[in-house]
Amino acid sequence: MPMYRKKVIKPWQLVLLGLPLMIAGVGAPAVMMPSALADERAYTAAPQCPVGTPPEAPGDCLSRRNATVLGKDITGVDKTRKYYLILGFADGSQQRVRLQSGISNQKKVEQGEPVTVTAWRHEIREIATRDDELLTTTAYPVGSYLPLMLVAVSMTPLGGSVLWMAYWVRRLRHAGRSIESAGRWHTSVPFVTAMLYAIVAGVAVAASPTLAVGAAAAGVAAVGAVLIAALRWRGEQAKAERRAAALLASVGVGVPVTEMLLPARVIGEVPYSREDCDHLVVGPAGLTATPDPRGLAGRIPLPASLAFVRLHASVALAPRATGLVRPLFVECRDGDREVLIAVGRDHVPWVLGALRAQPQGVGY
Image (cartoon, rainbow, N blue to C red; front, side, top):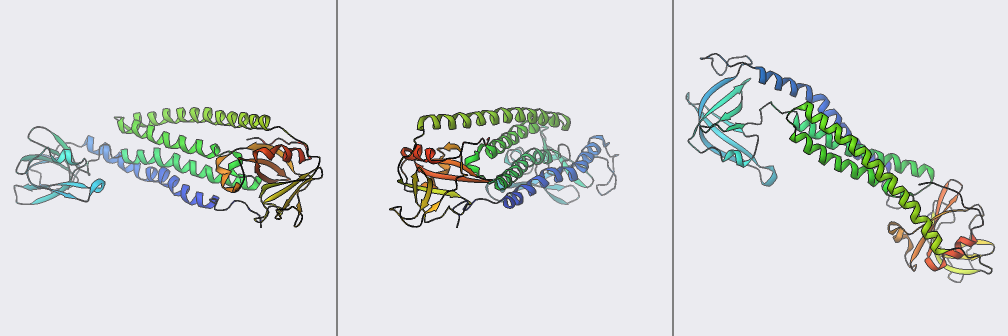
């Protein structure tokens, strides 16, 4: 059984994670933003109700009434706390309203204090204290687009980066490569960029006075994020290439003239990659995997078509090299399949010398 890709996340699992984020990031604002903006425009353009207009009267005018704070209420715990005021009116009616902000706003009024409330479409939207402090309720429509914008600039890039991971993992599978040998930066750079963009764009949107300014700020942040990601991508690619070249130069190549038995593991979706084969016979005739610590029985020849690609010293691959001293990983290609040979650093030159095929280029 090939000893390869155990407990590796599947592309469909990443799709199940990334797709809901994308749908929420794009769909929720697209569906809810128009009504939120329409309510904001209607509220800011609404005239004052004529004097004597009853609170239950229909219409989009702003109704102002005097009220008294009868009490305060807090529900939930920690970050789920909600803050309420209980208001009493001259006709004896009472209403419980939830404040838009937290306890700081609730402390701006005291029990028994007279306030003026502004209602619109039969809901209290604003509360003015006797010190002219303006408190807003969760029904306040001005700026109601902000949570939707924050959802868009956070969930959309994060969902997109997870879907990119799904695409990249699937592409590697079809190419017969592992994400460790290809380089985890192919997925980490987009994901970290998405996270940083979500933070920067979120702060910019929250600090913007209008939707247009917020959208422009998010756009500028997106351009900056793409440029930074491109530079980081190229930098990681160049660093990986330099690291592989330096590692090969430091190890060198030795041509075996007699057979040697080395502790090693062959890792890949190929028939000569087996759990029980933990030794490699290296000689002028090539490479042979064997489970026999003497190298005499159960030999499985590695094909002559096996071609060296590059060396790795990746820590992520270390669990596959249990029992080896200072292991390195010799990346090879067998047709369209990736094969990794885990072997101690001192033995790498002999493995390279026994690989009879010429190196072939496989880019990062």
